[in-house]
Image (tube, rainbow, N blue to C red; front, side):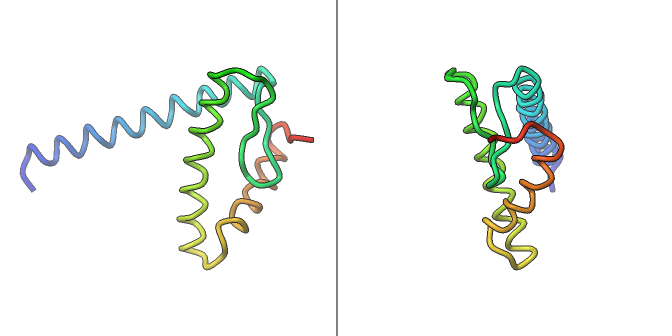
Length: 98
């Protein structure tokens, strides 16, 4: 690999990492403010009708959907089963939707 290619790869990795951290911080803030809750299906739900929260929920859930699909491939379960298992833990740690 050329040095340029390695540098581009490193910059892209840092960007993805920083974006993930920013989303996580926003999710934590939304949780703390009572603006979101954890669904039984492993996905976040908005508790307020705000464009910012709706966008956050979509971003988080898009990432979770991808993660559950990858986890399902590795473990041989369906993505839905992987999501429900994750939901059990998430709902214990964070506000559960009623």
